[in-house]
Length: 412
Image (cartoon, rainbow, N blue to C red; front, side, top):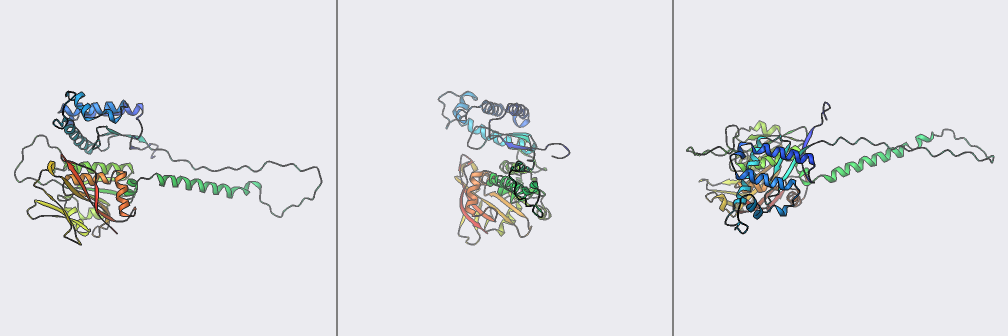
């Protein structure tokens, strides 16, 4: 709290929302659907309004299934073939992209709506006042009750310097306070998740984290298009990279760390020497291509730019490659790198999250923002805070990445 004003932080709702939170989410939804990202479509608002309303009314995830959405929202027959008519999956994918774009532009929104991959049940984040600090507790121990002298006369021995009864118990009181403080600190440490430990090892509250995004390569000839999907300082950013950047920015914000997004083409060496940084994307990120050359596994691109691969620098015969001539929706798998290291050129703590293609970047981003995947990653690394580099694989179905799987690991 500063100047008597309680600061607020966005928290994921792990319990059913309160009535006030339901009201705020509904108001936010209606405001969100007026944005040009949504109001130029009929399918997207219908889908999002239905799943949010069902979730707020307490319906279980089992009731928000693809067939139900197809029938109720899109008017399909009860026996329609979901494989032949993927309208629900396609709409959900578009909604996820539009939400990522919206919250990238409105990253200070007090309410956020997410539709996680693999589910149609939305999740919500709402800002809440910070919990006030717990006041120190001082144990007060009263002296023993007064015992009257017996009527029998007895010898009275007066000690030379006996401390007063109230001071006898202060050492015990201080010990109890120390124990209490220790228990509180231990419980706070235990409550930290793997995501907490991963991101707090990157920086401290006095520093700003740079999130370095690649700019899309321009086509040599103008490509006609409708409303551009994204604008970033007059350059384009891939929606998948923006999604990963949004997730990381949210994780840092939850832990009260500042973050600043910058294009790789605009980031200077001086910038990277002044702040911890996160590199997103590979082939179009000049800083990823430069700094990964010092790591055990590095990205490479063929001279004709058709192939990309991750190569083991100690044993170049070991590599994982991707053919860029194959459309993303048809590739069977993708590969990516997750690394935590201190680059010798910048001397700053840094994290690399990148795939050969977009699906690998999405899977790597999911791995560092999901506790169960990050638990497995840190367990494989063997230590919670040291340097490591992992190569991950993700299966791709219909252009969507699956869970990340570790295929190679180096630690130091």
